[in-house]
Image 1 (cartoon, chains in turn purple, red):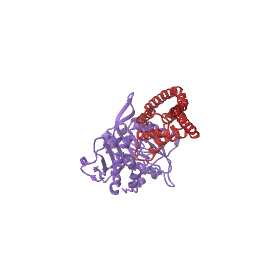
Image 2 (cartoon, helix red, strand yellow; image 1 turned 90 degrees about the vertical axis):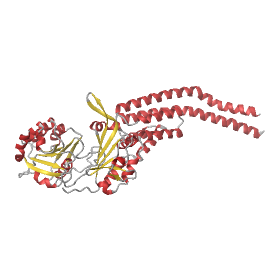
Image 3 (cartoon, chains in turn red, brown; image 1 turned 180 degrees about the vertical axis):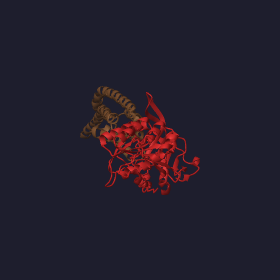
Image 4 (tube, rainbow over the protein chains, first blue to last red; image 1 turned 120 degrees about the vertical axis):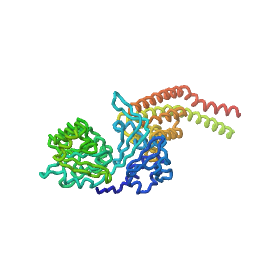
Length: 327
Length: 173
């Protein structure tokens, strides 16, 4: 897959590093550009080493800003680091982030995401908020422009209809990145179509205050933070899309909403967590919908040759029996 | 003789002006506490009902509040927006320090304002509502005490300055 992540270093310097506490900010600012370009995650956990995930490797950071493979010897995150970072990412306004705290993450300008760990407060069994933060995980948003190009031609039937497509992928294999690029390409250009993007976890368009931070195409309407099942139905009724795109389906209500979309003549591209069709077959709702023929194309991803490696692209008639056996 | 009269007038005048300025300080304290109480109500509305992020809530409060609450909010907003990594509590503390320089508030009033900073922004809406309600109640009590002090001390300072001046002149003759 061609990976174009131009400008990621300056994006990290301008959109991520300023939120960190002064000591961490100073250490990361002195990292060489090459390290920043490969940076995927920054993890701050109180009383434990600061960890940077570059590629598949975790590094610590020495106080002089040098990366350490032996992260035990690196800078240890203090409570003050976490408090200052939290104050910066929330603009000292936790009261304005109630939905984000319930969801467990905050999206920053640029689409970067900060996962939160701390004490969860419940009200009548539901998550009400989070406080006493003990860990923060910054995940760097990367647009891999063009990563869906090789797949794009296979999404169409001969008669010009879009195939309902299911992308199967384990975590961190690039399914969201692929979905974003497919959305962008399908909704752009002179032959583009209207797309409704139901982005429950703000991962695909990475909206910041309602505005997509990543390119999802000129004809894409985003329902940000909207539950997938209700979002799909809402999109069909309100936005008259030709395609609905959503991420990580799996609940019975999601499956029901997918059926509604297909019955309404709206194409769907979605993803699901899993390694392969066999694994999907063990989840009754998903196995049932795959077997019903709702999806015409199944794509599986892995990290075998880096994130976003397309392992298989199968038409439904090839895979139907396999899912039944597995189920 | 003329020199003596001029000196006496100067002493009485200086003591009188000092007394009047003290009386004005006592009166101003009530006004300043009221400004802070109203300012707190404006900021509370921006935070708990409109749920504007703190810098924006402060910006709005600056336009609506009167001196010295306006000055407090401006200093806090400037510190939060300069990107130097200040927390809300630290920025608020800088604002409280500024009040010490520009207002007629007593140390106990400044300390009350300062202690609120620890609760500013970093909790949910309900907790913010409670914190603001408590602050407003406490400011109201301080204001009442300050008003009582005005009734008791204003006349004393207004006339006391001139009387003290006269006494000094009499002792010097």
